[in-house]
Length: 305
Image (cartoon, rainbow, N blue to C red; front, side):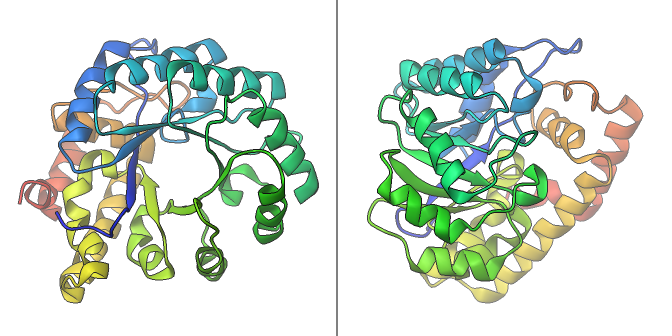
């Protein structure tokens, strides 16, 4: 598959659970093998898709450690999301990510007691970076989810002057004009990772250096034409593939996105269990109905062609 040169394409990996909601770390081997075969460049663990905020600090460390162990010798890079509400937890997770050999960390802002200024956010990031052993740090910008609305242009200017090994943003926001400006003003070594799968084509046109998303776990081949377009690929095929991706996201979301997405992984022979409570998993009847909807869409043909 021809893609944007040096494009970082990461799956936001699911955290596997047993039927009773306990970690099922042995399932990560199959996940890693599946993702490596999809042409991805890395995995992003313990983020939103990975239910990181539904895990204890100890569980998050176990997940990151297992991924690090499984990915030794692999071409997949490992990004660990370390964001949490309590700064001591974030620092502990950052130190652990460095210990297990992660390639980078990312963090969302604390949501319950959010930073009130860009300066406060940089100070918080600096406290985390001190524990991260020099790992590159990316900020996970998702204001619709975190409720934190800060000026990212100002934050980046301040972050560049701080000793936090700033790498860029995982941008899961609907403000495409802002994203375009951020991409146009990158410094050496920085990147902008687009986080809205259903709008990947727009993100690429705006200058994304990479993408991190949930549907790449189970639908990576669907995005081939989208990723090829900036390299001279067929625009019509790219537009059609992106439209299919929107239909796919809508179909999965109709059943409750995260439980349904994990069910789709099971359909592909990569069982990752249910979502953790209170979301839970789909009943057998709803899994069958979802499969029927996906078959009607042509999903299984999309990912096998």
